[in-house]
Image 1 (cartoon, one colour):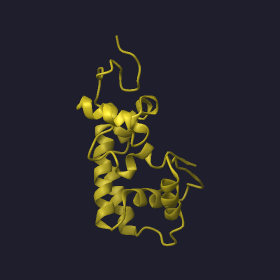
Image 2 (cartoon, helix red, strand yellow):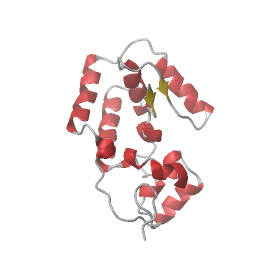
Image 3 (cartoon, one colour):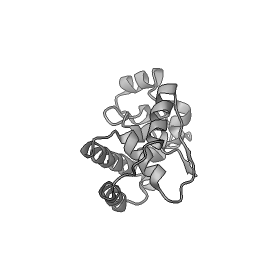
Length: 156
């Protein structure tokens, strides 16, 4: 079973231009993101627990995956979900959605008949081989502007 296949929305590309609220050094813009969240990474509740998808290594990998998607004429969401569907040991996928449009978009990628080409799969593997565990490669320590650590724990 694949869980959180879009990494809480990071693999949709919606946090590429403007960082997640908890990572945004522009406090006014961060507060605006919290007031009108684009997804879970802009909330104080879930956002603090999903830091693993926002490490520098993870964001660098996501940027490379976005370039692969663009190269082959698809969205990052499509690339991510079709890759996930194509994994031989994945029998089911849990994908979260904030609205019906997102759900319908995701479902259409699970109905595409043709698999991703061997070249696309190789391009994805090449990014993955650079850092096999980007979720656990955090170099951010200390407290943020809310006085909390990376997973939302209070820091005196």
